[in-house]
Image 1 (cartoon, helix red, strand yellow):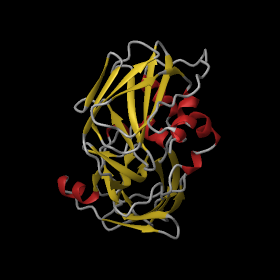
Image 2 (cartoon, helix red, strand yellow):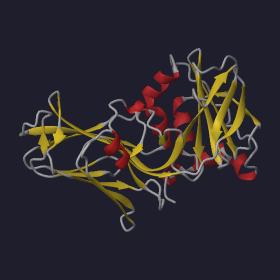
Image 3 (cartoon, one colour):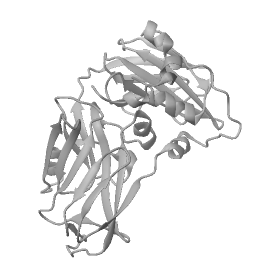
Image 4 (cartoon, one colour):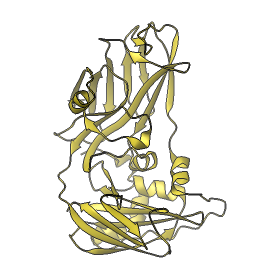
Length: 324
């Protein structure tokens, strides 16, 4: 399994020493000094401040070409492949936008988590591709295919290609490519393979949108409770929680509407599986960021204690990306 290894540096030793010795006991980070000038109006403002900007590239529509994004995704466009929504051919320069969402922290900050209708997914790499000329959104002409290579963030024999054509990142809800074609009555075409030599997923596709290499994770629903201490007044309005599944590139929202709640410092969740994970709780109260972490393998009906401590955005991001 290859994913998130790049982040497992000295930080994980100090943050999760207790977890290595006793997996199901609380392992809290050392209190982080409060930064006086770091305040956030809400969790949304915190997350927005940590989102990595999308990358943009300029291509000549007539000649096409290959672009390489910061995290290694490469995309090759054939010559004369772009058109306007009315079918008119495009010439001159076009702007291609790419967003790679590979790390645990970016999954949480962007809201692009690998889930499908209440099922967790093991992500080999989430990314977006789009193109514009001026203010005009561009499409690929019929028959034109992009060739994409994505560095494998996770390896799984069950990997398939997932799509979503949502415009807003935080509204992405993944679905298998074939299902998207059927539901939306689109005549899209795609091909998907794993290259073990290059340790990458190779995709050929005729449409630009959100894409993801994913495998389903077996998950049986059970109910667990998480009592939060250390700061009062934690509710849905100021607190979010996630299960980061160990040794999977997967982030699972907890306490969300329809599956649970966060009320009076208690998170209730009814759709957990008996899989090793780290529960991460993030709160913003009176402008201050608080975080709590707990390694568990959930047991149905148990209440777990999580101590919240003042933290910084940098420490949160480091902690998220150091999780196994």
